[in-house]
Image 1 (cartoon, rainbow, N blue to C red):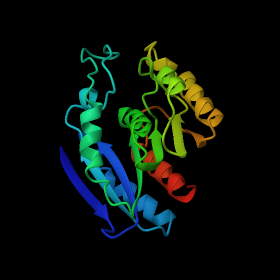
Image 2 (cartoon, rainbow, N blue to C red):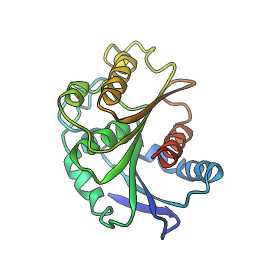
Image 3 (spheres, rainbow, N blue to C red):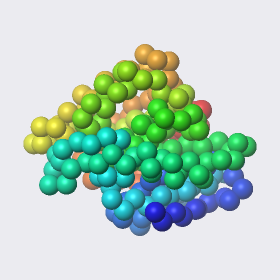
Image 4 (tube, rainbow, N blue to C red):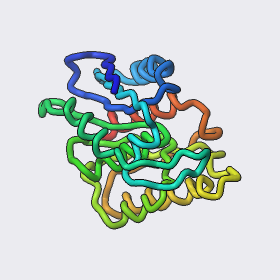
Length: 208
């Protein structure tokens, strides 16, 4: 796992983000957008995920596009990330886009290390995930959720449930007293991933 750090090394706020190859070139845009919209000093640590479906999935699930099934190696990924969150004087937030957003939510059911979660266009269609949320308690107090307004308009019957599943997740979190917001963005799943993630981190930094 390739790990890179950006921003102010001594900042009290630390943003944690699993990323894929497709996001590496967008990180600078994301950081600049956050910096342009807040005076809060922060450090961003990215964790490059090599096998997206395996390393970010909390449990095994069948493929919903292509032929690649989902694995169950999220716990190992989280254990690696937690090695970089040991300074108790820092405030840690975890966030991600797509399956990394789902992973970020799941991670905050496993540990109380993170004050808040950013799930930008998360893969909330992931089988049985909202049931998991219903039966367990999240260990952070602030959650940012977002979705593109065209994401649920897909021919894939599993992925078409993303809107309903995310609405349900939002309701579950609000019912448990979590400071949670749900923002709609313009476009499909592949539009403005850097901006959508940046907006989430900005909200979580200024509302927690």
